[in-house]
Length: 321
Image 1: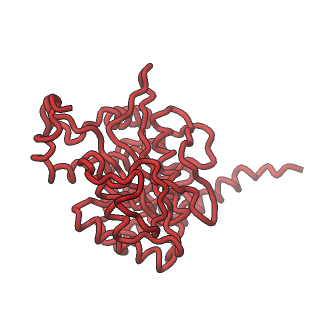
Image 2: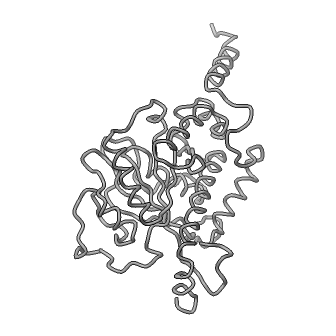
Image 3: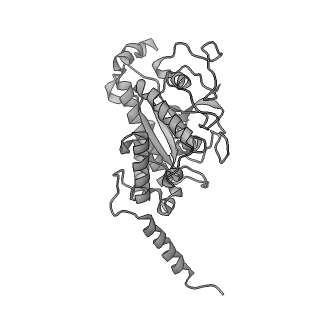
């Protein structure tokens, strides 16, 4: 016999879980208007599709081609899924290009610069940013400083088979000896699994130390870093129910603070994100969260390019293209 009280019991169970998750009455971070998600999503998508590096700081005679964003982190953190999620936002459907999934070892074997194509027009055009993916860090495949410098400086060509700990020589095929500013990395997004942070564990002490060591290389080149805190829906049931709840979740807030402390970055440089995984169609809330993250990264790309303003004006005039 069916239990007539089941819906009430289920609702009470969900309410008690949300209460355990500790949703704040006011967001711990002010973001956007989540109540009108379709209008908010349209505005965010339009902003990103019309993004121009350095925006109004460059005249019509100067055009910087695109910025490059590097995804960096441990194996299984969700780097490739981050790209697939952002890419899906613009394609208007779940659109998995990068290999992703649950595996003991990294599914990414090449350094790849993925273009993002707009699906809003009849003739899709690449947008003014590319997302670069590399093999996830493992204890036996940690990144060495020289390889990281080569990647950041734009010496590594697209689709280059790259083992983070392997030996790279300037004589190897595909090595760019004189990269331009548009070949270089303009912002690094460190992808961190929220479930590991929430459990107060490290993926491994070696991987965490390796990430921090690579930050010294990034800092030496004045390359900004942000953190994409992935899988926040796995540490907060309310966020799994609605991604917008991440910005009222005390669990997510504490996770952001912990990552900020460990990696030495301001909390406003840590972006909670839920990737598309089990879904088979787009969710406006997931898209909004992804585009908020992307806008934050693009702002940091512009901050880096500002250091090179004179070089850009001199070398990227339209008449010289």
